[in-house]
Length: 325
Image 1 (cartoon, rainbow, N blue to C red):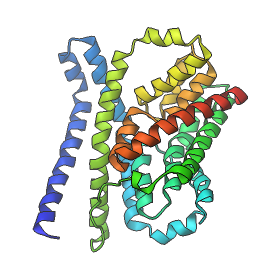
Image 2 (image 1 turned 60 degrees about the vertical axis):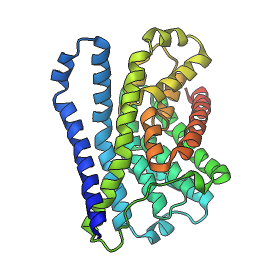
Image 3 (image 1 turned 45 degrees about the vertical axis):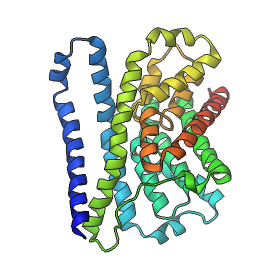
Image 4 (image 1 turned 135 degrees about the vertical axis):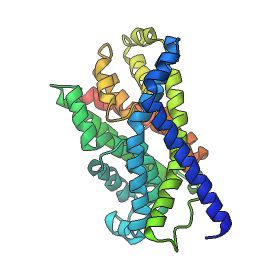
């Protein structure tokens, strides 16, 4: 490694340590900081901001670690054997793979990026990106606990989320363009020991996903404070507007998929179908996810993929809710 590379590596490592230190300090000193802020709205902003980070960071770390494992320890030939060769069949297979990987949307973004780097067709990686946070056992169990006596909500959430993930994968096969995905340059891992390569890959993904997570959390906290609760109450009585309202709310609140079912259950003034749409949209399109996708895949990708996913999730969630709920 050249002297320039060594200096660049030290600089980036320092940035990661600073980011981690700031997050730890925010968590440890949340109460003293809150007491220094007299405005209740600022207190609410701080609470929401820290809460989003506390929920998301463990799963982001899980995703970054798994992404580095895929990059360093899993040979490219594995994916050729594990997934069907035909891209149209690889999409549903990758979507179903989300069942076995408990995690949230924050972790699935760097994993999907690593899958694309390892030769997996982007359509299949994107199907996994959307399915994993919504159909894994932890999320479905949390949904069952949040909606006791309503197993239909669990079935509807799993089915609708998988349909959206597969549909978006197939849509990418049909309309997507390779130049829309601009993965940030990752350090060349060839020639490194496995330990050094693992650390370089993990550090790279934390830099590109973690920074955008902080921006997304700040945006979610701002919207949470700015949107009056009475607006939601007035929208709940209209079937169409209630669905759209909760879809937009899911985007703005940016709640981790392991916890969003309990928020949906608390919105009792809304219909089950509109709450299902909330649960389908949230793990696929929210402010922190859009920010992270921009950091990992590029702005051209996020500006196309997020709106298309949102529309598909609303339509599929509403249709499944009408049939099963």
